[in-house]
Length: 205
Ligand SMILES: Cc1cc2nc3c(=O)[nH]c(=O)nc-3n(C[C@H](O)[C@H](O)[C@H](O)COP(=O)(O)O)c2cc1C
Image 1 (cartoon, rainbow, N blue to C red):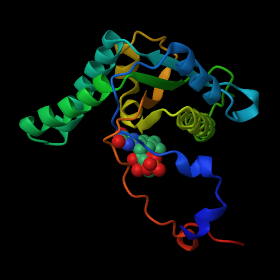
Image 2 (tube, protein in one colour):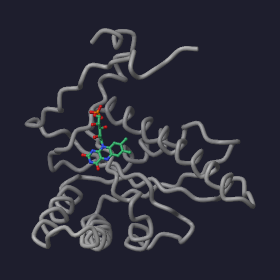
Image 3 (tube, rainbow, N blue to C red):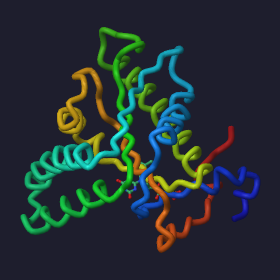
């Protein structure tokens, strides 16, 4: 893979794996993934992230139904055909229900700097999101290292209030990143990773 040869093997080894066995993931293992996420760098010594461990059918159903209801509204507003909406929402619901565990990363303003202007408020929130993303990568690398499969799912960032209310989280928690976790289904092969065209992706000055 050319320029990838200098990347440590454990970085390359992490893949998005979207199919799992039924085997539950022990709570301690899930906690260790959250702990890894919480070792991420964060702006000015804040810890703006909060995590929700969801490994019960009730929890998964609540989150799937809550986010699904909002997605239905959004898809209908986009003019998507009702049968297609049913299909999309159901596929997504099944994905959540069949993952042994879900880890939901949220952000709060706790510890973040407050600014009177929108520009800096956005920048501050953006920093917190970057930090959460760093945490998610820590989490997924730790999962891969433990032989677990994981996949980051975008949904909650499109409907943070729906996700928050579905799980009865504090109003100050804003869901932003969902990670499916479980033992990898032996039948699943990750998509081929396209070559990395470094010369198109970076410049030097
Ligand atoms: C912010 C974010 C959102 C993502 N959302 C989804 C998603 O909703 N469903 C999904 O199957 N994969 C999702 N992914 C996983 C990407 O598709 C995956 O990381 C990418 O294809 C690269 O593959 P790799 O992770 O195996 O290297 C998401 C990744 C990121 C970073």
